[in-house]
Image (cartoon, rainbow, N blue to C red; front, side, top):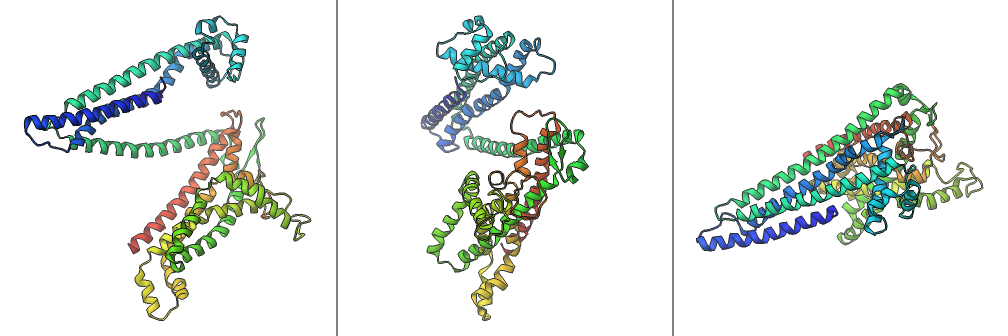
Length: 487
């Protein structure tokens, strides 16, 4: 049974427990002529939590542990025939794909496990090809036997999982229904469960962040064991080669990242700030009611759409204007992919970030400051320029820094709009690339993760993480200081 069906059965049991516990509490209160300690729905929620909580937790843990156990029980079949230097993870991936194909063939009645065991490896591979299963290597007797064991162990694990999870849900529901009595403090139990759920959600978020950081740190340390840190941080050439002789200097990538981000901010900050001033200080509320949502729709457009817009529209327009034989006849731009292309489109993407945050910050400035300035004879524009903007400046700076961190981490616009050349150049019409684009390219394909050319992606990610974290910390500190001043 698929895990989603098991989870749905658990939820149905929990819903039934809710209804039965609620009815039992009402009946007990009538029989004993006593007032219930809690409202009726708290007794129902107690049974539902007892039924769903432990069962769903067991299901989640089982889904994590079962592949590990299955892999440990299957690997001995392959270990005897594993060639020297073979990668166990790749071999087990083939075994899993073959087992999935055998499951599909068995469910359709085309090939039973006994028939699969009797088939020669070549015929079994042909059957898997008909099933749409792509294998990375030839099917050997060991691979076939390992897949059959994986299929058998997985089937047993699924059966035991369904029995354990559904049985635990039924036991929890029965326990919750039995506790639906007037003297039971059901509300307190529900509150404790809710607090535990909120704490668990917070811990998951924190542990996820810690796990990401630790993964970056460990792989970055491994990279610096294979490649000198000084050459990485101060090298001016980026030329990876999986055959050896790579030059992995990060400076060209950092320069491309900063150059594109600066152009994006030059586009986004004035337009976003002026739009925020208009919406906050000049626009009628009817205009604001539709203009602000329309402006913020830019933030909801997928970045791949912006990338296609840069590649198919903005790039050709810039070539027509600045390319050889273009409108201006300058010959500065050789192709549509360039720093200017990605910077302009990324600036358009950042406009709602700057505008929305700046608008909220400007509206947070006390009205008394505006009234005092206008009362002294200043015009509205003078009030905005000399009173409102200086008061809102810390928050606006924080909004700009948050937009900068968003620009530094952008990938798809850069991949499609800026090109893939890692160079140190001041010409904004040259093709360049960024840290995020090279992370994607280094991890694309069948990379050997023991080589510095693949591990460098983690060092790039760690560098980018530190830069964006520093920008976010500075931005949040500035915004928090501003809010403490005016709230």
